[in-house]
Image (tube, rainbow, N blue to C red; front, side, top):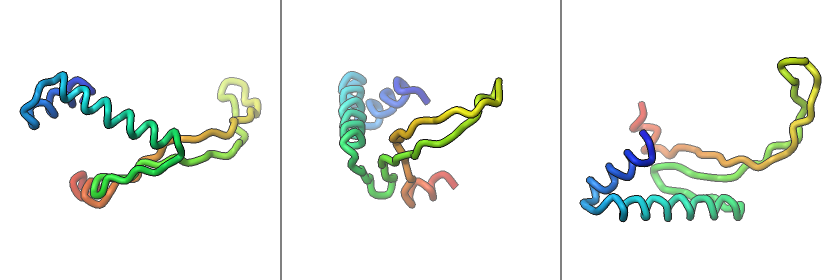
Length: 90
């Protein structure tokens, strides 16, 4: 499903315009991004939890040459599904 298809479904189910649904989705995504950028955790009960995790610096290999390379430490976004979402996917 694409973002446009998701917006169309939101608009249909909420009986609103696609423009309004698109703006609402953009606001939701902006809030999630800003919370994660601030290092906070965001929990949507039943759906799941968005959080930030830090990865340590590590050694990897260049697949073409086999040479060792250092992979820098970084922060990554994580998502842990909630119970309702897990049950819906079964």
